[in-house]
Image: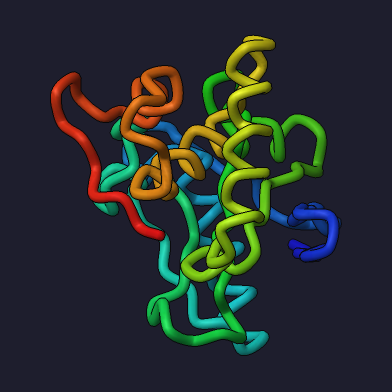
Length: 177
């Protein structure tokens, strides 16, 4: 298996080498094929100096399906490894099955996962982009996760973004300036 991360474009391309075993989700094997794929990707990247863990997104507070997985840094304060890798098309296909069928799969990479958004202007610009994706009805799972991470920066009167970020009605987030 070959793993290539393009942090500039936000992609992680995973390609099968000749002789690689197919991922299997049959009885007796552990986890889904996507779980197995992320496990192998994690091991390859950790050998290259990353310090990633595979985790269920909902356990980190993201409002997604309980089966959604991602790779993230073990230590959020490590600037070298401040990325997240996941299948942003998880509602459409299982990345492990796609890898088995095509011998290749593209995963999403989010850079500066824990520190990306610090300036108010950048935050507002990004929130407006996410609003446009919602209004165009083409927001991805990754963008919803990103919106959830920005909830403290959403104006308390912005019901559209708050609703999509999973904030319950009547619960106003603490605004960070």
